Amino acid sequence: MKQKKYAKMLYSSPIGTLSLVADEQYLYGIWVQDQTHFERGIDTERIEVVKGYPILDQVISYLDTYFDGCVQDLSSLPLAPSGTDFEKRVWAYLQSIPYGQTVTYGQIAQDLQVASAQAIGGAVGRNPWSILVPCHRVLGSGNRLTGYASGVEKKAWLLQHEGVAFQENKK
Image (cartoon, rainbow, N blue to C red; front, side, top):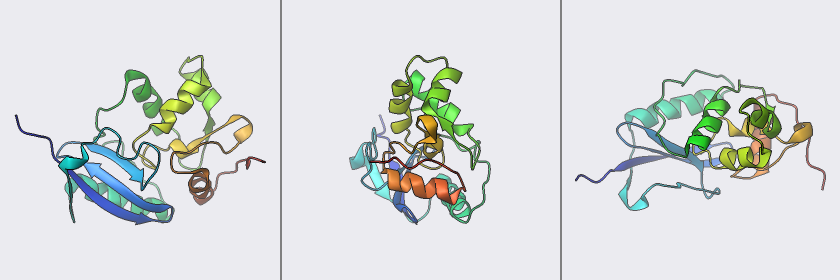
């Protein structure tokens, strides 16, 4: 049986270096370097760093456009079928949050008829497609800035970039 190989490109963004990983069929992830769950589920021995790759070139074009302050529809981009059924439901919900808008963990729990906003938070935190599947658009109750796998300061930057109002957490 042929071993799966992954292609990886690094992307320099305003929130740090992003690692983009795909195979011939799917985008497996967009991670901020050294974030929680970095390249989770990927056999790093099978990753080859490349200069260009069809799926990753598309993602880079999207990221360039995003960081220039525009949006484009990437719903046709083939995301890897990873995660539990619960995580997939949450991640699909995240994809429906429009640019420049936010929802709370509690609202997602209510919409998906899940008893626990904490369970939603866990699934949101394990989202492997930073920015593309916009987990940064999820806020705590009272629109408070809460957890982000690569750090709340990066989440704050992304929300400010999109012109979103939120409450800073007071220590």
